[in-house]
Structure formats: structure tokens, C-alpha cells
Length: 163
Image (cartoon, rainbow, N blue to C red; front, side):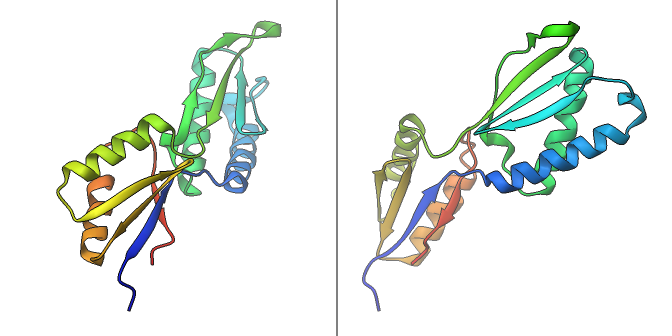
């Protein structure tokens, strides 16, 4: 038996699922009656989505459709970073949505503090854009997972490499 158990905390967005959700959202937009003749579009460019439409109201509708498709495909909505709505050419508006990949240093420190204050017998260690949690008891590790799920952090966490 191993004397130490561990798991990693990551925050990743599956870009293939995002691509599939964009394709599904565009199909729905093309077939909906309220978008007939509209210049609405969603483009995936690297780790960002560019959403454009005729006006603010239709832009919000396009983003709502996109979010619905992302949720159905299991993409965490908390990892989306919405830019400001800008005017574009031809009287349209656009908005850029960036995908947050990894855990930034500020949130990693918050997670460390949460774990330290929990009085569980576990250790946390920042490793780049992820955290490694180690402990002698699997029960303590599962308690840490439940603590972090209920912590209300501004990003979606996944727990991987549970050993």
C-alpha cells in the first residue's frame, strides 16, 4: 500500500467540445426564425470565441444559445471570460470571449489558504497552472475535494490523477 495518496487540481476547457458546441449553435442560429437575415456569427479563434450580431439584444441571444450548447457538451461556463461589447463594421456589435485554461497564481493561493484553514492533514503544492494535494488518508483527500467544490471559486475545478 502507498503511504501517500494524491490528486491534482486543474482547470481546463476541452477545445474540441467547444468547437462542437460552436458548430451546433451556428446550426441553430441558421434555422431559427428570429435570426433570419441577421449577421450573427460565432468564430473560434485559438483560445477565444468571437461572437457578432446585429444589435445588443441579438448578441445576448446568440451568447445564450452558445452557453446552452456549451453546458450540454460539459464545458465549464465559469472558465469563460467575457470581453466588452464593441461596435463593429456594418452597424453590428461583437464581443470576444476568452477561455481560461489553468489555475492562475491568485486562485491557486486562495485554494492553498482554504486547504490550510480546513485543518485537514493534507499538503498542497502549486505546480505551474495546477495544484497537487497529498495526504496519508483518502478520506481527507475526498473531504478536500468536497470543500473546494463548495468554495464558490470563480473557475471550474477538475480533480485528476487520483492515486
